[in-house]
Image 1 (spheres, one colour):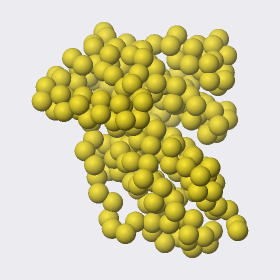
Image 2 (image 1 turned 60 degrees about the horizontal axis):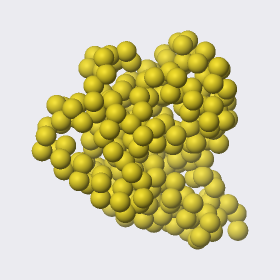
Image 3 (image 1 turned 90 degrees about the vertical axis):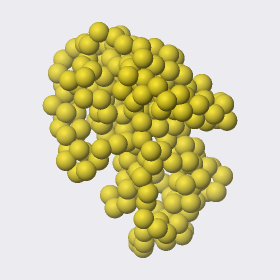
Image 4 (image 1 turned 180 degrees about the horizontal axis):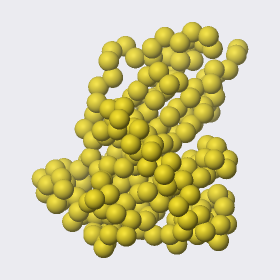
Amino acid sequence: MSTRVVRLTVVTDFVCTNCCISEHELLDAIAYCKDVLQLPLDFELEHLPFRLINSSILADDTPKVERSDFLQKHIGKEKFTKLQAAISKWGEEKGVPISFRGVMSQTTRAHRLCQKAYKIGGQNLQVPLLCAVFKAHMEEGRDIADINVLADLAERTGTMSRAQAVAFLESDELEKEVNAMCDDARSKGITGVPMTIIDGKWAVSGGQSSDVFIQIFKKLAAAGVHNSPSPFSAPVVDTVLVA
């Protein structure tokens, strides 16, 4: 049986808890489809940047604000409390200790580094680095606008040496490109993330469970290499998005 290549383009931001959760769910779905179901699919995965928080509100070098304080101020205490409960429940079920410790950081530098990783080594370098950035911010409460934090992650994931990462992050390389990508996403009507685009044709908006992705991938596998029917039985519905 011929193998179909599924291209997944994920528009994401590191301050978004739904993005972090969706990344876990997507990667779990891919692993399940390949290792357990052994579907005749290969996956090409690329992540594109998005900034949920305007740089006029939070710049790279803005004085640091605690994440919990920032979120309560900008989404309200009641919504933040509900968010905490939902994230805590998911984390307990999945064994992923997401918390709201640490500071809220602008994500331009982290996005630049992830785009650099993709340029160097495609998904094989970008995905491990992206997961490490999410883990540092969401689980460990580290400041992902800090050049030293990002340089450590780059070295640990084999993206580049620490010295190379520092030199890159202290330059303006890929800054214009990242800004343009963020602007382009908004110009196309994307106002929230995550957004997963499948084969450049279908968009899955909001955080989705691994089961949703598995069902989509099953339908794509059943369609074969040449046929490309929509894997969706109904219009895709947006889910609630939070920063």
